[in-house]
Structure formats: structure tokens, C-alpha cells
Image 1 (cartoon, rainbow, N blue to C red):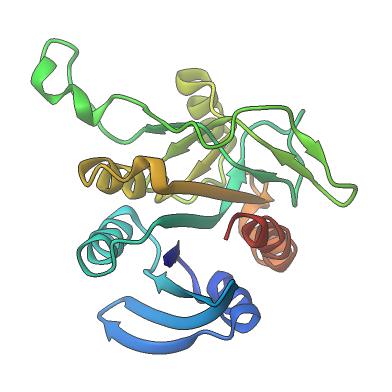
Image 2 (cartoon, rainbow, N blue to C red):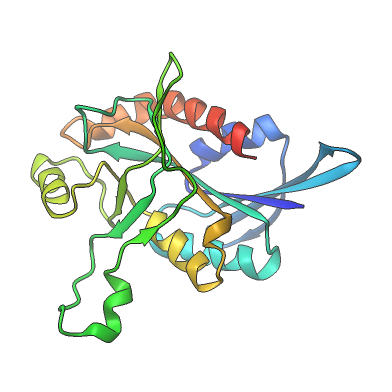
Amino acid sequence: MTKAIVTAMPEEASIIIDKLQLQETKKLGALTIFEWDIDGGDDEKEHIVLLLCGVWKIHCAFATTYLCENYSPEKIINIWIVWNLNQSEIKIGDVMIPNTFIQHDVYIPEAINELKYLRDPIFTDYAIGEDYNLEKFTLHLNGICVTWDQFIDNEDLKAELVEVHSADIVDMEAYSFLSVLKNYDYLDRAIVIKSVSDGADSSASTDHVDNLKLAMDNAVAILEFTL
């Protein structure tokens, strides 16, 4: 059984690589692949592959396509750090498994129906339920994640995303990740784990760095349940 993890930054991936004792096996431009076989119990071996793809939708799409073409994994987990748009309910370090995904930075007129797939939301049914208070952080089991090709550190941009999409969090890759999986008919294999590092405001760049390890440690705690 192959289980796959797709993530963007070395700072995110290193925690997972160390915990699962993964070894680098291949490098393709911005994409680096790490793999290892672990004991799955009952004399079964689980093959774990991690794709460190780099930030941005195009890098994520390339990595996810490569993954589907070369591994056909039974479970595909996207784990990433995100910006928080809903500070009344979501806190720094909280983890979300969203169920609705929207692409913000595309404009297709409503009249052009044949291109509606570019603006349509993508829905997953992996986790829709009550949130879990895990004492150190909250696990949110539904929510709206919007994907945009910008680092969000501006209150006006933040307000735009909330007004247009009622979004809870924003990232730079999830919609791309799921779009590829949808084309391979792999959506039912996907799990998206997002952990909040900052508030998408004027201090986001500093908070992102300061809180990255906290956010990833919490995300990896949830990852271990899902593997």
C-alpha cells in the first residue's frame, strides 16, 4: 500500500521526513521526492512517499500529476501552513480539514458555461462533523479554503476573500492539488490538512516564520492519525 504526502516548503517537510525517517530518492527541478517502507502490521509494508514540491499552484500541480502517474497511491494527503481569515473561531496553531475549496484568482464570465469548471468549488467529504478540542489546539472538521497566488498580509485583501467567498483560510496550492486528483478520479483518496500560522494581516510575514514549527507540529499530530 502506498500513501503519499504533498507539501510545499522544506521547513514543513523536514518535520515529517525526520518523524517517518524518509530518504531522498529523486529530484526533478523544484520537486524533491522522499520515500520509505514502514511496517503496517499483519506482515504488511506501507510505502510512504513525500513530494516536496515548492510553493505555488503550478509546482503543486506538477508534483501531484507526477505522483498520480508514477505511484497511484491509495491515500494522498496535502499538508500545508495557511493564513487565517476567521479569527473569531480559528486560532494560531489550530488545524483544519476543509471540505470546500475555491480558486480566487480566476475570472470566467458566467455566460461562458463550458469553462465553469475553472470557477466551480471542489468539495470533499472526508471530514464533515463537529470540531475537536484537543486541549493544545482545535481540530476543525469542515470549512472553506480559498486558493490564491499571493502571500496575504493585507487587511483589504483579507476582507476581499471573506466577502467574496466567506472563506475561513487561504493557501496557495489546495485547489490545484484537488483539481489534478479530480481529473484522475482520485478525490476520494484525498485528505487536506491545513494548520494556521498567522492572521493574514500586516504581521503575517513575521508570524508565519515564528509560528511555523508550532503549526506544523500540530498538523503532523493529525497526519499521524490519517496515515
